[in-house]
Image (cartoon, rainbow, N blue to C red; front, top):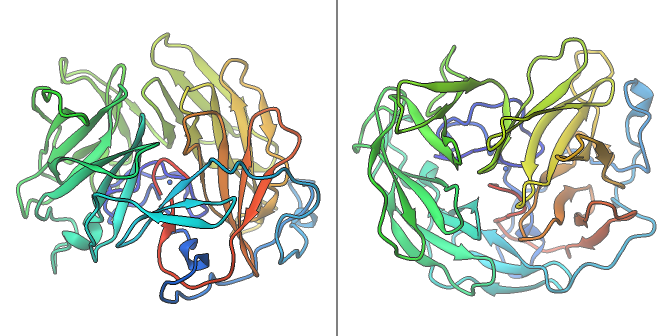
Length: 406
């Protein structure tokens, strides 16, 4: 039941429809072909089509398409931080160190043919067998299946710990909390009212159970209530709702949400005439408007863990009907609204596999898939260059987790 504001190359303005792949959204989710480049796994088809990288854009025209560079990012780069590790999902999830290519199994997660979803939460990840596979019901793609186990994996931990059973899991507003949502088995998610409860990942007493509005699922706990999205996609139900269980008759709606955190919501309203991203600070009510480069729009976003930055996937067009020609990653400062292009990320529209802030600090990580390799790039705001690590050719089936979810 998951595709919430994830980071990936195939997302557009999305409803967070049901975190199963039934919905599109975390997209954060584009399946990333990484372990395909780790040794000792079964083969997976190569990513179709060439991906390209270039030094920098002259956006807004057909001539701005990145030049062919099948080997990906080149030129001067920084060394990759050897301490950084990322989780890789699959039926047997592992930790992966990009600097060395080393992997280590993540303990506490039994072998599961469904594979696992990793949902970024404060302090780590909530982990759950992929409900799109585990709970699939023939003839009823939008029906709830049996509840699935939920685990918590902290950033430094070698193993995950059990949290509970649920149909869906979402980040809580406070570190160490998640929201678990359950539905009656077989219920139609488009019309059923789920029940949600805030749970401590360390075993503390759970919060009171709340009944959600029919047809909605929790996608983020915030300081001003729960951000909800339609559980399934239907015309006229694309609006997200900021909903307070203590005042259920009052809610605020948002269209085109591209990122959310405990303290902020970002959305991309229709361009008129320029494209902007609006950000609401939930604590102060302050709104920040981020103006995008001419000829571009924001396809996806991710807040840094401390809320100081918003990374944006910015797509560029040439005015025709062929779709986006190229994209780049930009990062906006939430204190000023100033937008900065991430160096070296001007690529063709199919190259970006995922991006996000998977560590506790303000380090943005992106996965870029090129014709001959997959590269991981990391960048700290203010740095003049990227740190780049290329994965080695190999065969596997799995997904590198670089975003808030995959």
